[in-house]
Image 1 (cartoon, rainbow, N blue to C red):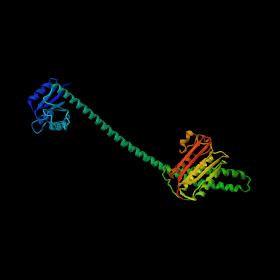
Image 2: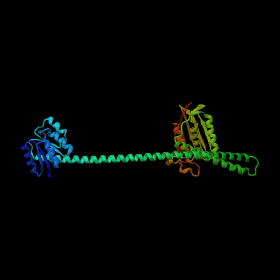
Image 3: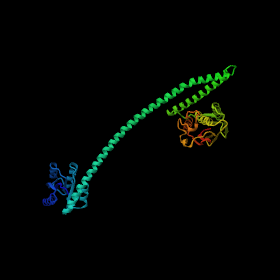
Image 4: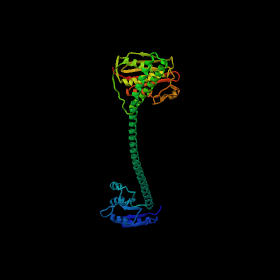
Length: 392
């Protein structure tokens, strides 16, 4: 074992000298011998020590236990207790000072050296552990500070994003509203041109043809702006459930008339209306968005001469509906993207569309706290099933 600087605190002079001789045999350096706690503290104040051999019973105000408490606080060096007593009361007092070891007199030199070696080893390991704990605490403190700063940056970024989102929503809503008025004027003019073309005119057929093109284009653009407005409100969290009483039959017939008027294909809609109340209470605008988009898509992606089945009925406080077409269907690999904004399947070809219709349907169903599902096979068509809570 490597040499140590040792302080002996022992009030029995003979025992102290024997201990000194035994320790010096193992090349340890004795920095002093004290017979009291006060003297031990004086020696330590002037000479650094690696370990203190401490008799428990010392004369004066400071016994070995009190002296050890002071050494622990001021110098943080290991203390090995020396005592002829091993009663429970003494051991209880000793444990409270967290000693490095405890030796019963008379001691064996070999055992004493082993105890000292273990005491030094224990002290160094405890200090290494304390150092690691301190380093860990510092890292935790630094990481906590970094995390706090990162959270502040994230909060600032989220606030900025929220402001940008609000600005974008305002721009979308304002621009879309701005387009609505001129589009209405264009649509009215196109309809007037068709009326004038009914009279005798050398370009009657051409006027009617181009007026119809203008009307169809304006309706398409108007539908797109309606979709943009819808998501502008959705992003600004301004879509609220606004229930009101509605006449069911008139509502359904109006949707079918609008969808047929806007369709470019010769597709028949088979309406199958089951048991349903004359009036229901729900959000008319959201229901309109759901059924108009589902039926429009069904006709758009069907071929001339095909049919679309539209079944609707009421059951247990819910409006139930099925929209089934026999059109191009949706590729299986793309079905999980169906409700994504601007998504259009690869098989739509040159069929025009914004990819917003089914996103609007899903959002509207969610606001109404309803459910929607679909089954589709490419080349064989698509079936949508709806269930929406209503009040009579």
